[in-house]
Image (cartoon, rainbow, N blue to C red; front, side, top):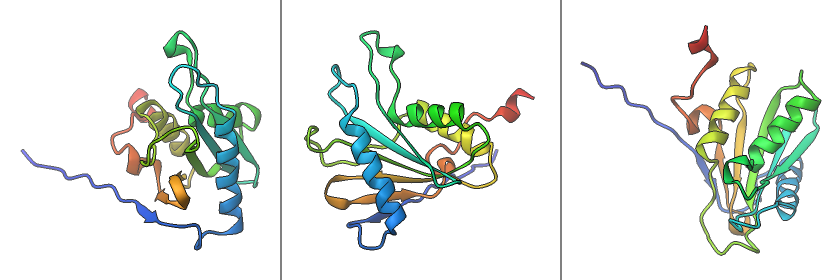
Length: 161
């Protein structure tokens, strides 16, 4: 028997002062997206902004349904839309946030397990990692440099070969 240790790391920033104009634009797009989320049941409004390698930003927000499994999270709405409209593009980063004006929590929201798996799939299709920006209240930002850091044992298409 042997033990294997898996570690993840992230970086926490307390304000936006060290981010570029392009990153701040991505953050703003994610914040705008969560304002249009359809979340009448959970009241948990999430927005995502996906930066493609060509510089386009595709946004998504959570879309709920009275039949709960039929809804989609913001991250999946954004990446599925990008993939359906721009199938040959790759992705640099994604910014994810919740509407802190309507949600009274101070924690940063991490992607759910399904979103982690979907992001893992798209990251595995391209040569570069997808950087994840998790936006918190009052300019707090957590950066995760790869989806694999969020899902170290992601289900890979290699298992299906």
